[in-house]
Length: 425
Image 1 (tube, rainbow, N blue to C red):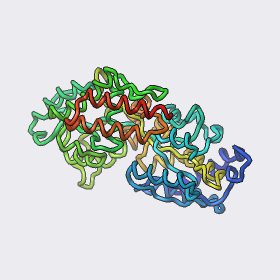
Image 2 (cartoon, one colour):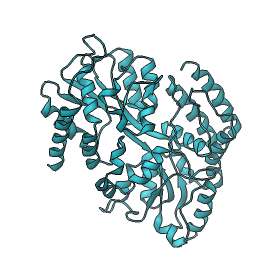
Image 3 (tube, rainbow, N blue to C red):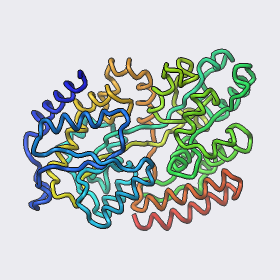
Image 4 (cartoon, helix red, strand yellow):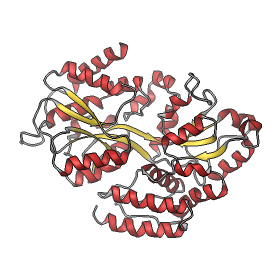
């Protein structure tokens, strides 16, 4: 009840401030069209987004929002949105897109340019805001952001008398001591997301960034023929060959790794902020409640660089009600609404003020670590053919992890393939 009241107040605050007038992006009827809209987005298991939509609908009876759930996985989400765009369907007005899809959707004119003045862009965290642009123009608004963090068994590290590792070599030395404890006899050292899907692109990008490199430069040119890229891929490959990573981690997505850590099978685990509350559940579902903590990811010679995650909101170019769509995005990403949203779910918000809020820091103790990780995060390749680029990375990195090709061969093939892909950006 309290959250519903706050959400309603957030709507009122938004209407009083951000909706003082319409933004005339063009003279077309579609650009200034108003009325009921459809919001294609990720299914929210917390119920917070539906609650915020109900608050909007109560204030906007002539411009009500209907939620349509996109498929669960990122690949399925992109496929459904691309199909809608290729047929120029007006079924969706506001769409949720993964951060690195912005360039592709903007270049193909599937989403419309947005007026920065409508969205109080100065309040957003810099890194996700920059990722929302294509050729220096704003095409999406950061809704959720995120960066991988290192979950670790604080109880076991304390018992072994070791500090939280900051480098890859320290991870190995710490694990040698921790795994010698009777309490950790059945555990493995480390796991991330290593199955052949988007999570592998993320983990590879993090490994390269944590060695001081980048998958592509600011212009989209691949940088995989560098010592840093080799060091990053070798860390992942050697993790499996040395036994640092459990062999079953080659099948891990987010949830498989989360369950392994939650069951006490891992000392260290790379994952997103959403699993924190699940780890601390006191209903008997977690073996590690109260026994873990988080830190930034380790790197080659010091703290590493996480891959920037997150989802953005954009207006479909084929929407006939784009004025309402823009207003709804401005509402959903305004600071009052984000504050309400943060109270009801653990999704990382995109406005800096959320991370400084004392009450939210008490509710989510990991916020300072997450803020540091986001500030230092590296984006995935910003390419028009991002889907093709990610597929190349997944195919070659996965083959290297399985020992089917060498590190040098994987990097050489990716360098060649991404060079061809970048020519279309």
